[in-house]
Length: 418
Image (cartoon, rainbow, N blue to C red; front, side):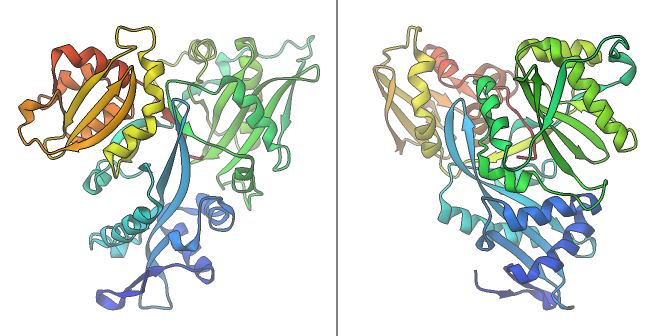
């Protein structure tokens, strides 16, 4: 973007590598001391970042950064289908410059850059409610976990030696984590795609114990890999994330190990993000005696509804298989009350999707505002769940079963660090 002069001597522009010291000072002032190492690594090594994707507003004094928005190019996996995306990251404004609409100005440049990249979805884990102003909608849970009380975790008997060994991975050995992860990679959900090159920004040396950091491990028994997980130290706590195990019987060993690592950092509290494996998740829930998981939110924006539906269309035949709609041939019409679409199916597969000019909502099968449609397409809520509390959402009775099958609940809970 070309530099733009704003009021009070402010200048909006792309950042450059020479701005890194000022950007880090900005990060520290807005996001706190503990994120400094992680965000510096993001600027230097993130595989989905370029300086064309950085947007800052500098002040009149020595180029101080007063507001920033960064774009990260990523890939998400929705029920097995890869979806290109852009993510808004490291958003913030110095306190004395807030409430001037600076983030709105930066978002306009972000949107222009996103349009050049043509993503299927745009995502952010941001301020509650605020990003709905920019067209985003809540679409998945983020973070949270079962708190681990040390007194509830059985100690290893003194006369028995635990056969479990935890192998910490480095950048070179990180693919071993991904290889084991493939065994239990979840379906009927969505998550970020991770590739071996991502280790360059996920695994790094920290400058102090207060810095956020990630530690990846394999769970080994008699030379065989039987599990994998990673620890995230952040906001004065330690989370056990992406826990995959061949057997739930090894959960106690993992929890004892996590507690021992937490003791190295002044006994910070430990949590376990709900595992994707049902038995492991149930065991963790019972062992920790935790009934609720405090979560936050991922927000999603779809620049083009037709493009998103075309992207997930390969899922439809499988979702319709072994149902009365397995060979469905016909039309499903959808209106957001502002735009209309016609989805044409042939023998259970999506053949075409086209905009429909019909203005009368009553002539559409599914009537649903765009925000609620986003929640439906992302699998956050089913059609019936949305209809139960949204009077503007209705569907022709004969096609409700088809919509339920095409867009099932996905129950995603996406960790923020990937």
